[in-house]
Length: 442
Ligand code: HEC
Ligand code: HEC
Ligand code: HEC
Ligand code: HEC
Ligand code: HEC
Ligand code: HEC
Ligand code: HEC
Ligand code: HEC
Ligand code: HEC
Image (cartoon, rainbow, N blue to C red; front, side, top):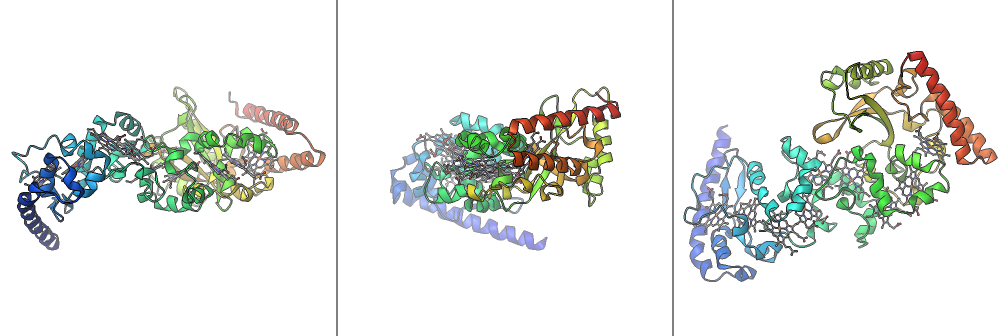
């Protein structure tokens, strides 16, 4: 405590010294500013007379220090030199500025207020950003989610800088993903100067960034560039479109990644990922609930949970979608050249396949970002799950064995994909209607 007070006195002292230095500099700089800054308007040079002084800073009540130094040459080179300081700082009246007791609670609160000015000239970007997951997190009080000025330094914006591999703003916060991306097939191409290979914002957008898993893993974004991919896969992968729906692209194209089955609680009325169900202990506290026990939620609990969520009188029905994905966001970016991709059907279509040993269930948390809970892998094959996990049925012990036999037969006698599909659908329907009957549903 004493230490902190000592620190802030020291800072306050250094502030007044540098502020004095700045005021002394007014006299010198107002006459001629050296370098590029000399090309700025006299109004701007007046501001820079004080703010061009290195070391000018303001200690904040929370112990942070707000640097007040603006480099004149850098500003003169930036796209905003044409509009001048006053376009963004119209509230500053030099007759009253600097106000000695101007209180700023924290750097973050200062940024949140100041960044609002950008929307005056860039309303389109602002509109997109305000619908993004980042903006949702800012509204939720997340202390690091990016504002305009987290990605674009307002006094140093240069054309194209946000689009370059070395200076792309995303890497400052998503460093591990950037490293994975840089080693990927796209990253290698981009480093080699192939600018039509995607960088972060080509896939996610820069301003309208959404939660990728809520967006079916962005397969449509991939297919938007890889327009021949469906046809290329159809040459060897039966039911390509179905696979693309339930298997994420990285699950095959990041061959070193761990695969996992993610079950998503899904609002079948609004067709959106369901938010965390309030009042359901399994999803309320992460510690000590069934979902965090070593083997995870068991089939019976899951069954009862869904029954509770869908009890009579509830308008929005909850169901579950299954999806085979990679385990982590980092792994999703480790895309390898396609000759390394997984083509071996038995990676998935084999009893005990590794991919089906790890199962999670996810609900939408703050900003719509999924929170994953462990689930007992038996959920996939349990009779209790048949209603809830319908539409994702080539999984689980018995069904896998069954599929294996058909597959081997099919491959041996050169079955066409469509015939195989028909047989599978037919057997499945029979199986499903049988179990519906048993449980007295639908
Ligand atoms: C006489 C020196 C001086 C001049 C000229 C000056 N400033 Fe300042 N400015 C300061 C000092 C000192 C502070 C810190 C005051 C405080 O404690 O809040 C400051 C704070 C600021 C701040 C941050 C706090 C706030 O009030 O939002 C901004 C932004 C700012 N100045 C912009 C400008 C602009 C734009 C101009 C030109 C129109 C300008 N200043 C001219 C000395 C100056
Ligand atoms: C494009 C709009 C824009 C222009 C032009 C601009 N500023 Fe700023 N300025 C901002 C924003 C936004 C912030 C808040 C930055 C943040 O999030 O910390 C800011 C912050 C500041 C601060 C507080 C210290 C800091 O960096 O956060 C000072 C001092 C300042 N500006 C001075 C100037 C001066 C002097 C000029 C002209 C040479 C200028 N500004 C031009 C938008 C602008
Ligand atoms: C008073 C109007 C105005 C305000 C306010 C303003 N800008 Fe700009 N901005 C411009 C102009 C003018 C350009 C240059 C457009 C051009 O040359 O095509 C520009 C260009 C840009 C660019 C484009 C760089 C590129 O790669 O082409 C970015 C990024 C940018 N501004 C960010 C911001 C941010 C962040 C803020 C808020 C801190 C802001 N602007 C506030 C007028 C403004
Ligand atoms: C998460 C980082 C991030 C945030 C937050 C962000 N931008 Fe950007 N912005 C980028 C990237 C990356 C680019 C370049 C890629 C592109 O053009 O799509 C860009 C490009 C721009 C451009 C150049 C024109 C264009 O669209 O290509 C403008 C203007 C701009 N941003 C303004 C803003 C404003 C205003 C805000 C706040 C509402 C903002 N940005 C928030 C990352 C961001
Ligand atoms: C200033 C820090 C910051 C910057 C810069 C930033 N992000 Fe984020 N981003 C976050 C935070 C914080 C979250 C919340 C989740 C987390 O903590 O990872 C997030 C979440 C995301 C999510 C959703 C994550 C999920 O699990 O579904 C995506 C996608 C994303 N960011 C992409 C980007 C892209 C693309 C860029 C560059 C255009 C970018 N981010 C720049 C801080 C940042
Ligand atoms: C080729 C398209 C592509 C590029 C380029 C790309 N991403 Fe992603 N990103 C994805 C896919 C696909 C997912 C995973 C979706 C899923 O889990 O199904 C993802 C997921 C994410 C997530 C959520 C991670 C999580 O924990 O769920 C973040 C954050 C993210 N990306 C940030 C970035 C950043 C930062 C960059 C640049 C370094 C980047 N992405 C480049 C396609 C891309
Ligand atoms: C902005 C366009 C763009 C987007 C979006 C995009 N890619 Fe690519 N991708 C390319 C380009 C360009 C290449 C290199 C040329 C080529 O092989 O087609 C490439 C190469 C690849 C390769 C290597 C092909 C080979 O023959 O080795 C794979 C695999 C790949 N992309 C998968 C994906 C996946 C998965 C996604 C979505 C997560 C995606 N791409 C999104 C443009 C894109
Ligand atoms: C079941 C595994 C699997 C899935 C799912 C999968 N791929 Fe592939 N993909 C492969 C394999 C294996 C190859 C290589 C085939 C070959 O060399 O003939 C390949 C080849 C490719 C190629 C290069 C071939 C070309 O010329 O188009 C691209 C691009 C590609 N995939 C993109 C995607 C995208 C985008 C997705 C998601 C929509 C996806 N893949 C889903 C396994 C898969
Ligand atoms: C990365 C894992 C993975 C790989 C590799 C894979 N599949 Fe699949 N496949 C799945 C999943 C998951 C489903 C479940 C789809 C469903 O039930 O809705 C599926 C479904 C199927 C179906 C059933 C379609 C239906 O509508 O009944 C057939 C047939 C099939 N796969 C054949 C193959 C063949 C042949 C290969 C190899 C050329 C292959 N798969 C490779 C994961 C995979």
